[in-house]
Image (cartoon, rainbow, N blue to C red; front, side, top):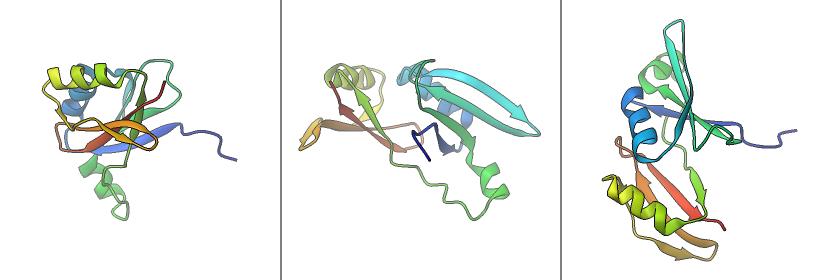
Length: 125
């Protein structure tokens, strides 16, 4: 049986620019950067001990290898203990961020990476 999410595949147009966004602006860490047979995948996570990581794949290469796959951006919801601080940090990094809104499940905002993929963040204390 499945007991947790291990990795999320994110298909991007430019892996190096995507790494820069996630590390320099969002504060993630590169866990590994592998290249095998011309296929490169980069594992990033909020920190080295995170239970779930994101794998950055080259969208064009994956489309050629598996044309049946939907390579759209998955809807990712990140959690943070301090929503206001993260919102300010991303804004100060010139990341496109939405307004903080209060939902029945908690306060949330969205942000976009440099390729205009949108993600959400929810405050979980």
